Structures are given as C-alpha cells and as structure tokens.
Image (tube, rainbow, N blue to C red; front, side, top):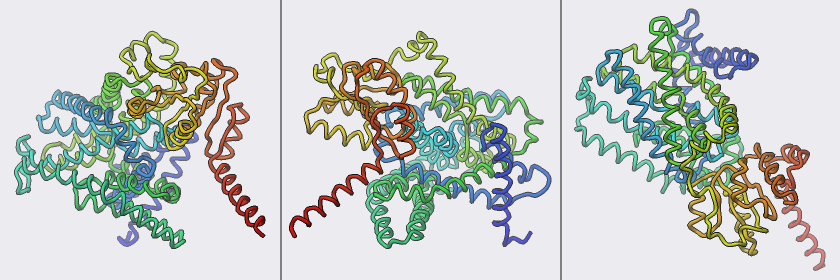
Length: 566
C-alpha cells in the first residue's frame, strides 16, 4: 500500500471493523467498546492479515482524546473543579500511592528490580479519563456531584502523571536505569516542572478565560456555521498542542482546560453540540489503537501474571478508593462511583510504560502486562459500572451494614439544631444548587420566602451554611435527605437539578411524607417533560418553552405599547 493513502486505509479499516464488531457486541448485550477493542486486535501486528499503521492510529486516537477532554471541559467549570478539591486532591494522591505499592509488591514478588517494580506500579495507578467519560456519559452521570468528583479525581491524577513523566528521566540512574540526557540536576528539574505546570494553570485561568471566549464571540458574529465549528476544533487541538509544547503538560490536560475556559462563553453549549460527532468518532479510534497494541500471546505465556495485574487494577484500586472516600466522610454511593471509575488504566499508563522501557526501567514483559491489564480492565469497566445498582440495592436491604459504613457521616447531612423555625415548616425545599437553583433561591430570598437547599456537593453545602443559608448535604433521591430538609411540613418541592432520571423517586418520597405538597420540576425538552407529566411528577417547566413564552410576552407588550401611542 502506498504511504500516501495510509491515513485513508487506517480510517477505513478502523471505522469499518469497529462498526461491525461493535454492532455484534451490542447485539450480544455487551458494551460496544468491546467490539472496538477487538477491531484493534484484528488489525494489529499481533494477528495475521492486514496490519494498520500504528503511528497514524495513535495520533488519530490522540485527537479523539483531545476532543473528548475538550467537550468535558465545556461542561465542567473551574468552580466545579475547585468545589471537589477537598476530596479529589487527597483522594487521588493517596490512591495512587496505594495502587503503586500494590503493583510494586506484585512485581517484586516476580523478582523484578526496584526501578522496574516502581514504574510498573505507577503505571497501574492512573486511570483513563477517556474510559471514565464514556462510562459516565452512558449513564448520565457527568454533571452529577459524583461524576464531578470522579472527573476531578482523574484530573489530579493526570497532573501527577505529568510530573512523573518529566521527573522519571532525572531519577532513572538512581533506580538502576539509563542516565538522562538532561543537563539539569534532579532538584532543578523538579523546580522547572513545577514552574511549567504553575505557568500553564496561571495562563489558562488568567489569560485564557478572557481571551478564548472573546475569540469565539468574534467568530460567531460572522454568522458562519463552518467558521464557528472550525474555531472550536482548532481551539481544542491548538491549545492542547501549545500547552504541551510550551508548558510540558499532556494534550488531554491542555484540551480539558481549554474547554473549561471556553465554558465562560455563552456559546459553550453550541460548541459542545457541534464537536460531539467528532468526539464520538475519534474516541472509537482510541479504543481501536489500544487493541492494536495488545499481543494476545501474553495470555498464554503469563496467565497468572496477567490475572495479578488485572486484580491490582480492578480490585485493589477499587477497594482503596472505597475506603478513602468513606474516610473522607462521603456516602457509599459516591465511594462506589469513584471506585468503578478507577477500575481501569489507559493512555498515561501506555506513555509511562514506553518511557520506562526506553530508560531501561521496565522489561518488555512489563509493557505487555500493562497493555493486557488495560484491555481487560477497559472491557470489564462497563460491567463494573452496571454492578453499582445491584450493590447499592443489596446495601439498602442491609441498613445495619450501610450505617456502619457511613458511621462517620458528615454533620452537614442534617440541619443544625439551632435552625430557625421558619425553615422547618411552610418552607420551600430546593433540590440543586446549580445555575437554575441559584436564580430560584435569589428570587425566593428577595421575596422573603424561606427555603432549604438539598445539594449533593458537600463543599457547596458548607459554603451555603457559612453564608447563613439552611442546606442539607446528600442525594435527594434518598428519603433521609428530604426528611432532614423537613419535607413533611414544606409548602413546595422545587427540583432544579439538570438530571431528571431520579425525579420519580424524589416525588414519591415527598408525596409519601407530605401528600399535599406542590412539586415543581425542571426539564430540558418537551418529550422529557411530557413523560414526567404523565407520571404525575408535578408542574414541569421546559427551558426552551419558558424562554419562548417570555420572548413572546415581551414582543406583545412592545406591540401593544406602540399601538396605544398611535
């Protein structure tokens, strides 16, 4: 095949085979990504027949990672990231340490040197953000409190891996590897790396959040749909590349922060919608490229080593995450979501494995085991997420065990004993402290209507308490949360959360305790609103319909005013 058409060849083979095998996997009730991984194995160098160009496939997959992370950034504001810092920062750091120790211990038992075992352990400690996002999106969890915690946790892991990748060459000789070509000492290398990361964050937060939304606005004013889409895609890819070239951070991390600063623009929703097809298409190539790296022979040569590697990734990391989240006084539900999110490895593990081999700090067997662990854990991850529901229901049938697991639950889960009586009866219970919830709360406060906020983000609840607003922390689908908000004596329940999947449970709880309560629900579209109304969810408001009514009312007022002056 002529080199000039290698790109077309890999696109045709990758997309075509992924479609066929993904469709077969879906018909067999398996996750479609299992088919994508098998497609990669089929066109990889370890299987007979056609072999795709791995270099081109890897670069196409990198574009998919950038676009996907950019899309997440468009839905994940800087405030969201800062809001979960108290759990994401310590949790990610300690969890990476535990996972590294597990991997190091297993590799040491195999007779590997300290340096080889350490690189192997660190490679298993970091999860794939791409895999996580696909899992969260398929279950509508990206914009939930648990989803934000999981994404924030992995962002911290990505930042930590940036430091590891830069520092490893400097410390390689001390670990028994090859000497680094860097002219700087270890201490100076650390300082330079920290300065580069700090410079990147400062640039994106200070300059980026002002400059990039302004550029998007200037392009939008041209009225060209093509130019707008081109601006969004070029911003995602160019900022990611520039961040890597100038500040040494990964493409994925650069694209994520690019999305976060562009979220400041009023066109962020439009940008997300227009890049979604590209995100989905190139994300498929990410999984195909992972399959191409895998050599099935390792399953025959080292089956026990593969099993141990998968156990560290799926079991060890998950158990460590559950214990850490519970120790940080978060509910079992959050612990399970974070644990499922971390039960896989991906792109950073491959990069670190390649670097470790080049520095003589990882044997070929180590890279093969990491790839095998990645492929198997990625294939199992949708199953792990699907098991969350049954596990939660099992715990609900054993309230004693659930109570022991959450014995140290945060006092924010109930109103203070000194709460004024006006917030305990005839009040409004407001579920959700997002953009819509804040506006509703401001209106209620201006009119002197007492309200209590039920919010799943612990940091936001703490901020509300500090500002004198009565608030309860927890998932409002759990009866205990609404009970603590005194739903029994409330006048109205306002559900202002963006996700409406669990509205039915909230409404059932509220009406069981307070049959006469008025329920008001936020919805995103007419179809969803119709279903909610049919289920008796209460009065449903659709954003687009209310906007249209407001605009029409204003136009009628203008018309009537001008008619009266004639």
